[in-house]
Length: 200
Image (tube, rainbow, N blue to C red; front, side, top):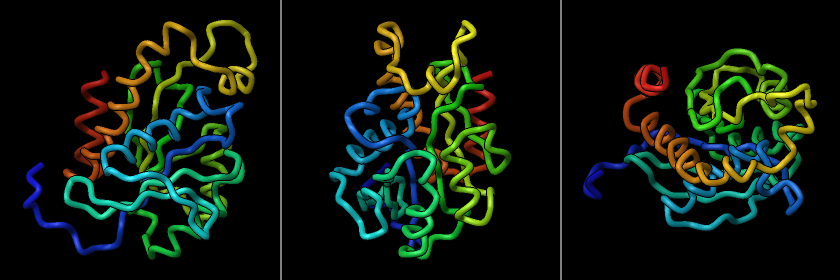
């Protein structure tokens, strides 16, 4: 994108990468969204700072849009309250919220976009819907696949990526960040059609 492109004067986009805080969870499958937020923060050229909402934020511009990249400092199942405070602070409506999160129902290595819909048992999404009063935000779903065995899904998402997966993880996170940029450039519907069709 040319640096001469006009920056939007509309309300900021809030881009939230879901995850759990602390070293114990830092590189687990459930933190795929938070890891993608780190990639976006590098693209913006900033570092996370604590906001009074209880979120960690980076402000900047991406694809001609003013954005706030965030990850909450709270646990996944408590994400909703701080994100409600943050979107309220920036006066960003629900339709200008992009949530990046891990997704069991998408194969590892793939990224899909979804607008609204259910939570499929994802505790972070459940908390967001409860506190934000709606579900019509955009989701960038980072595929982590379901466990191949009868292993409990909770144990699986809270475990680290396998050695083989770690080799492919950075390209996957970059692809998730690319999907966010495409939403900002082309709009949610067009980006969803392009990226989901490509994945199929």
